[in-house]
Length: 372
Image 1 (cartoon, helix red, strand yellow):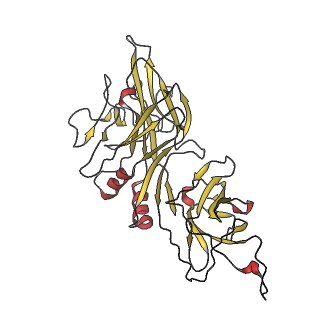
Image 2 (cartoon, one colour):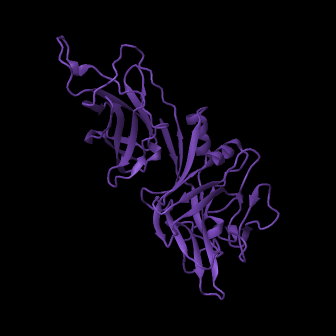
């Protein structure tokens, strides 16, 4: 029932056409193939994206939150624009080999800013060239006439750290790589965490006969769409503490949040408790109100988080990782506020199967704000 999002500590795009240019503060990460018509014969120019997440936060999450539970990890990038993309194509993701500096440049600064990573150098122009020969075990590179373009791991002694995502004409172009193996290797120390490199598939790079560009929001975008490393695991439990507790079994139900304060600090973890009951209780002769009895949503009920302004799904219903728990008090779920952008309003939705019908509960009382 847990979803934890980690945001980048640095990112940048590197361009073969501008080998010393740094873009560390640009609002966009770009993976592309550019037809360079300024030279003869026309050549293919390439851009690749680099993004790194804090090692300490990855370690803390896996050690103190995930613990011994199985988990999955996804690298997510959100599309800003796409140009001239083919009907079907793939993007690739690998762990970076070699320390790199983010820098303070933006795309096509005049003059180019060169104080951070670029196509030829990892640290700054003239310092720390990307390896082109003598690679360490499992490490490689890919370039044509212009040396550089990053170094990355294609394998390890235990797990395959690479990830590929295939896009078709009808699929969304947001990126969601399964990087579980890479994160496991980071956590074990088998690979030093230097982040990820994202690129087009080999068959689309350095082609002089076509142009395509995918632009994604960077960590400097100042929107709700920065890159994130999303870690999911199931730590839900369902034990009401008594065999006499009543499980809700009617589709005419009223569900409310018991302890929604409306505002939560960004570094907090909130346990939302859920009250549920039949909207129209069966008439009985009793000395107490039927409305005071708290029922339980059935096991397998789920929660979802949406951004109120944009209706963007921040945490989707997930049968493995957003299950609602139960204890002797009520149903509940825990939400890590650090995975949500501050100073924004969010809405909670609850999905349950009642009396054979799947129902999504959505109410204005389910709205809260994350504050700094």
